[in-house]
Image 1 (cartoon, rainbow, N blue to C red):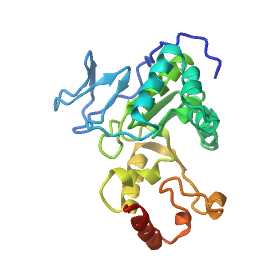
Image 2: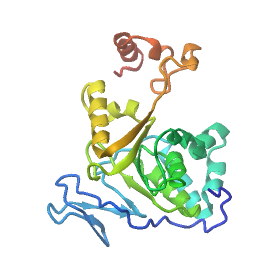
Image 3: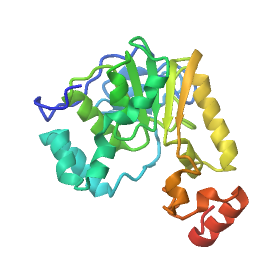
Amino acid sequence: MNLDYVGDARSVYRPSRPSIDFLCPDCWAILERGDEGLHCRLCDNRYPVIEGIPDFVKRDVVWSYGRSDQQSSFVRLAREQGWRKAVAETYADPRQARWLTDLSRGSACLLTDIDVESRVLDVGCGWGTISLFLAEICREVYAIDITSTALQFLSLRAAQEGLEGVYPARVVLMTTNPFPEASFDLVVLNGVLEWVPDYHQGHPREIQRQFLQRCGVLLKPGGQLLLGIENRTGLHYLLGYPDEHTNLRWITLLPRGLAEGWSRFRRQKP
């Protein structure tokens, strides 16, 4: 990938037509694309397509990548002056900038059987570092997230890098899945599974199992699931660094029951 962007910073990503059709999450009919977005003739559901990004989420669900005003100005700057300048002017911390842009986060995907003909689903793609890494290798990458600004940045960066075959969409896989069964050679879940119970009612372990089952149904026969998640006994936790998800020290090292009680005591949250 050419990371020295010299193209039109105002580019909007207009992907070529994907090889799979989006389905209506409610009735599973094939959605038709029109001037106002995607339309289901069977149940009359309509889903907008905003700057080339289909939006299947009918409620205001966001994941915090920073303040909402900061995210909006960040995407606007990326659109007007290029994604590199947007990162440099918005995120002074080089560690945060690398987290937003470093494509090496996708290198674990090389452990799988993907090739130039592969179709991949990147679940919880965020700013798109893994999706863009995969786009250099695979035929099609479907990048889904719940946060519009993250998907917009991914789209802009793809356009400014001249990448094709990247299809961002706003999707909550547990409730608004628009993909046919057996569609993907690889499903990537990197830093996602641990957060799923925050958005759905029920026991966390059962919710995670249901989520993994939904991902499994989307895999072709012989397809692979790549799961990335922190090691609960990692060295930094042993040294007393707070857990990234609860901001509590030592909690990952505790048995489940004690961790639950400690979280409720300190955070008033399960």
